[in-house]
Image (tube, rainbow, N blue to C red; front, side, top):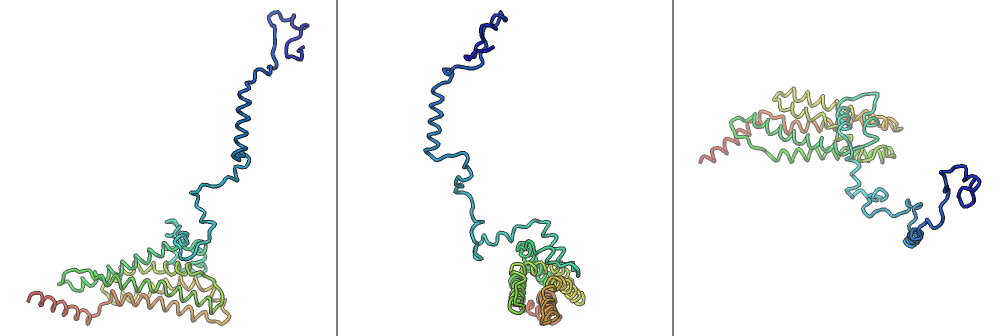
Length: 296
C-alpha cells in the first residue's frame, strides 16, 4: 500500500479520488541543523563543567548547612546543653505532677526522665522557689512588725538563692560520686541527677506560700509532710540501683537522702519564716532605736 518513501503507491491511489498523498514520515530536511548544534554545545558545556544529572547526590552542600551534628561537642560548649532544653509544656507538666505523687510500683525516673532528661524545668523550679521564699519572708516580716514601713530585704533573695542552688548541686554531686566509687558503676549521669533533684523541689513552692501563715505547728507540719512526700519520690527513683548493692548499704543511704531533704526544708523554714518571740523583740527594739535617732 505504501512505498518506501512513505507515499501512497499508484495502485491504491486511484481508488480514492479525493486522496492524493499520505505522509507517514518526514524528510531529514525537516530537522533544523541549529538544534543539533545547540544540543551538542550543551552536552559539551556539561562535560566541561562536570555536571552530571545522575550524580546530583554527590554535589557539595551549601556553606550555610550546619554540620554540628557530626562534630563532637564538649561539655564547656553552649551547644552541648541545647538538647537538655528541648522539651515541651506537656512533658514538663507530667514531670511536675510525678515529682509530688510517689508511686511505689513505678519509678518516677524511669517513666518520665530517663529517655529525655532536661534542665529547663528544674531551672525554673529553683528560680520560682527562690522568689517565693524571698518574697514570703519579706511579707511575713512586715506582718510581724506592722508599725514600720515595708522595706524589701534583698539579702533574703541572695541567701535563699545560695541555700537552694547549693542544695540542688550538692546532693546530685554526692550521689554521683557515691554510685561511681562505692557501687563502682555509673547508673545515672550528672545531668539526670540534676533533673531529678530540680523537680523534687516542686512541692516546696506552694508550701513556701503556706509558710507565711504565722502558726508554728502548721509550719512544722507542712515542712515534715512535704519533705516526706518529695523524699519518697527520690527513694523510689534510687531504690532499684541501691537495692542491688551487695554490701547492704541500701537502707542507710536512703535514710541519708531523706534526712538531707528534711534538713534543707527545715533550714529554709527556720531562716525565712519561723520568727520566734525573742527575734521579734530584738527587731522591735532595733526599729525603735533607729526611729528615735532619725527624730533627733
